[in-house]
Image (cartoon, rainbow, N blue to C red; front, side, top):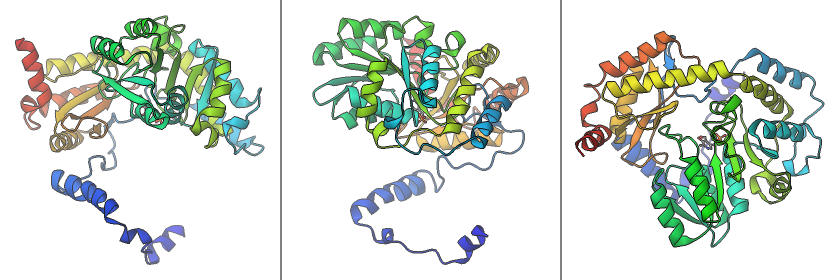
Length: 414
Ligand SMILES: Cc1ncc(COP(=O)(O)O)c(C=O)c1O
């Protein structure tokens, strides 16, 4: 019925059809300059429905939790037993509430005193940086740190000081120049699967009297003892001030988390704008994460499968001549310019491989890539399909001429 209404009524022409040119110019940049002229009318992220038998490598459900019966049942029970939701901001949650109890459970899992659940990983990072930094405080960000961390710096009105990806000598020089502040990194980078040198970062933070924030979105659940993450793996829990994570990856839901002390939590809830001005999680969302936490903590078999697939696929792609940076479950096929990357994405799709195109603003303009995100459930036949496709398409996509391939050759000559 609602579809019939939607298609039979004339579509209203809203006021935005006559918007000022400072907006239309920007929209033309997107629709005309980029989509029409650069990409021949095709949207970089619009793909056809994935056909049966396709290998879908564009999602972040690393441990294949979606649809897991124990989790679905827990969520259903919470919906059925709901006495009405607390539709309010987390500021008003009282000690002993379901959310606070789950936050203690997450804290125990991560080896922290306490934690804060947020509406998303984005809200965790923006809210955290915003209530730690401020005008005149340098925030040192790895150039590949997630966009939400940069957004937090802007929101705080602080000074963003970037350093080259994983380049500790450059960070040292920046610290010497600008003084103590806040160092912000991802533990496992979301475009190429590289790992941050966490022990060195902790040492630099201590020596410069700086705070250290580590975003564990792509390692919480997948790495470390019982999935507790990379900070826990390297025994750095006592030296990293704050860990954040999106729970929309290995925990397969919609929320974020920050590890912290109970004292800081009280301050955060009255100071972080996303915590104050946006509503808290709903009870069935909490129920999902409660069950997911139990599941993830004992999912060593799935973690081992993920890491096994990662090693096999990375080694094989390197043998095929791809310049594969990083070491973990996120794999970047960096074709370079956007039209080449779009062509790569579509060629892979014709071979039944669905990856995600990453381009500006997620990457520098000429370093766009197709991101393949591996998961614990990949079957040997799917891995074989991926590797065969990557072997067969090399000439068609012009692998030899990609800037990443040429970088690899230049390195080999040095
Ligand atoms: C490293 C990192 N941090 C934060 C986020 C934001 O998380 P969410 O999607 O839960 O807002 C993401 C998601 O893309 C991410 O990859």
